[in-house]
Image (cartoon, rainbow, N blue to C red; front, side):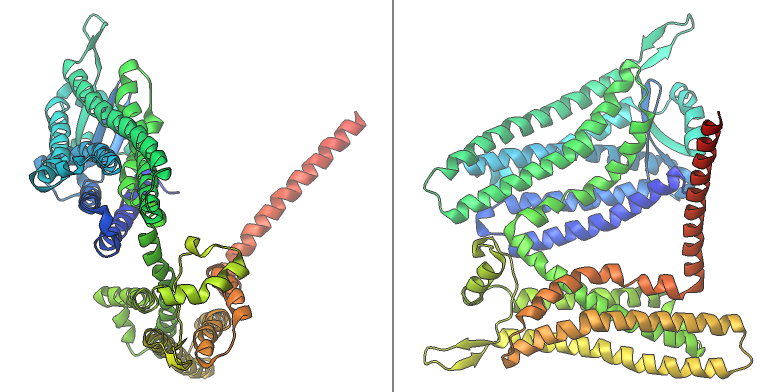
Length: 565
């Protein structure tokens, strides 16, 4: 069974990976897809995204446990899992705590900036030139103040070490001599049995409360003013584009406020304050550990879905998943042939080579996505061409549609049809990628079929090996038939037939459904063909059935007993 430290480590590493991906993607979108009217707000968003990456890096290096016991709170790190010296690890622990101070300051500045932008009274000049540098420095100052407060007032003492020792060793099975920690101990028991306030911890929590209160007050105050201003703009003579952009930015800001309130303000404020009143919040402390790690990965998500320009760009990412899938098929068949061949070429799937094979589907997906975003981006021409059919087919007003589309032929002014080069370029790239993948699948599938027959005819092979190879090959064939039927054939027809004038409207609706269903259908062959998996599932269902039967029999016995009585 997975232990809490193992779960904590897994979530920290998973969050680190997602944080790097999501925030890097957001920086790219901000730089390349942001409307010009966003102004310096883009740089604030980039600054925040880069900081979130830094936050995640420090979190995964330190691997902290947020801990609470009795009338204390602590953040600790296990030195056994790190080659970092204790003084450096202690410094990084303080830096990680300081990241919280940076984060809550960012929220306040974001809301202040957005209100100045909505207000239209020229106060955005305070976010240009030298002023902008000051605003960039404010979160750093708050972070340093938070980190210094932790390092100075919450440094470990003999008293706090002894107080926490048993709870830490019992909770995480870490010997206290291997723990680097900071701790706030609010009350100590004197020699005469009375409780005495610990001044250093109280000073620290007062500073924390002042910083959090300031940030939260600014967020609430300017959030409310922005809400009022947004409503006023809806009734003024602003262009629909400007109104829509302001509405999007405000929605994104609200979503980005709700996330930290739920994941940061509330958990951390309870974690810091409640122990001072003697409340045992051990369960909350474990939750804080996880949400503290997850926050940098979750925070950028609202922007992807609320800002139209970013959402439009990400449409290509969804399409890119198809490129990833067809690359996976080819690699599967190649790997299986190398395994059957037994000439030592499986070494190309170990070490650094394995990382290359993992990167190939990502590269295919990125190329497919880039092709969609670059060559098939919506234009006035394609928007007008599709408008009537989309509104009639799906009853969606065109202004509410985000799309990518290929228009192969346009009608010129003299009535002749002219090829649209961008769409043709896109379909040539798609055909090349699909053809490469399909060729590899067919070629190595045929070689694997021949090799399987040779192994089955070879009397020197054990029956277990023969059976396993037969199972794996059957699974591979089944997993090829499914994508050929659900992906290759529908998608190739969908992409190519319109170029020669064929109407594939019914096929497009079918493709919508199979594209969504494919990830759920793809693993099914493995469950039924591989003996070990099939036996495990059969055992699970047998246990469930047996338990139900026992419960039913028990009910009958009880009923019979009641009748007898």
